Image (tube, rainbow, N blue to C red; front, top):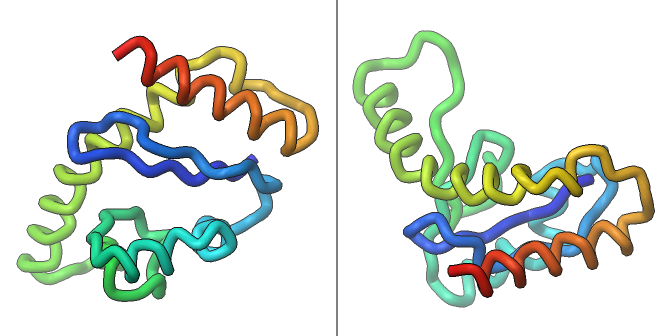
Length: 124
């Protein structure tokens, strides 16, 4: 399954998208759910992984490649420090045993993910 997640700067889950099949590329999923357009309209910056290269101005991604110049390596390191909070939110979501081996329709997965996000909000 492919679920897009937005977090706040402190690593708390804010929103989870409806589930798409796992074969859907991350950038395609973000565009399908209108995340990129919403970020542009709200003038909000977002830090994402390398899968989102080509998303446009509001989405910050690390540089690709093995032999990067020092300033690009520093940029990637800083980028990773910022993104680690978002990754903690993903780890929280993936920590729910229920999501590990789901084999059902994306509609049921979407309802399950929404319930988990609501439970996370209620517990904080």
